[in-house]
Image (cartoon, rainbow, N blue to C red):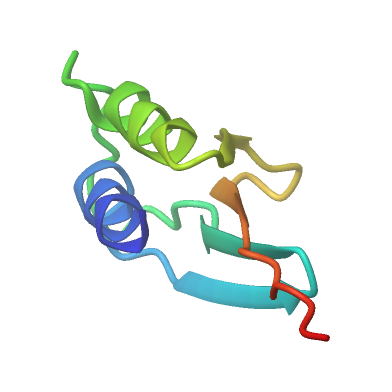
Length: 92
């Protein structure tokens, strides 16, 4: 998920700053990759008709996760995936 999101940011918004955030909770892992708004240092390329986000969504849901992606209020773009974490089996 991180690799695909970084590739997409480099391809569609070259020259922007990108931040990767990982947050663990007892039952889930949240992964967010977001880039800043393009600053005009490179051409922003529109979607190329590939399977990027669609394929990424399929891979995330195949392990029980959820994916959201889209433009952000600051002009950037973010991808957020939430993955369930296995719970420990109680011992007696």
